[in-house]
Image (spheres, rainbow, N blue to C red):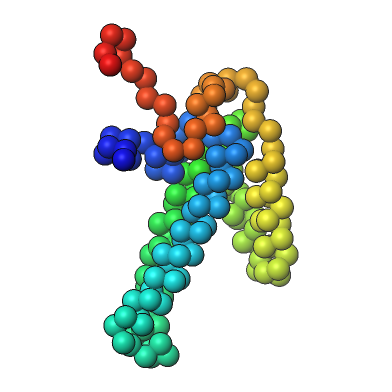
Length: 159
């Protein structure tokens, strides 16, 4: 089991550094699955365990508040991994704002088209090759393939 120091260094808790395609893809799947399980299935289980009527206004409010909170938290983690992926491509993380703005603008006219554009952009980010050289966001090292923990420099002479 990782210690507290390593938990703080989970890749989804920072926007610094670079993340290659495979770890980004796996983080995306894991975060989406967890968000679905915690944000939608768990509130339903809570409502059932409290013997609340699933159609009551109180249970709907409870589920909605819980789902919104979980969605916001997991969106932050998703943005952190996306920023690292953009860094690996050689692009600033601030481009996320433009992507969201464009997709939101398109969604005003047609939600389906906005979702398709977002899906195409997401697929491009997953498939776009890494910057083969060091860039301003960090070196191109094998540790960028790490899924769980960012590498920590160890002082010379200490175990």
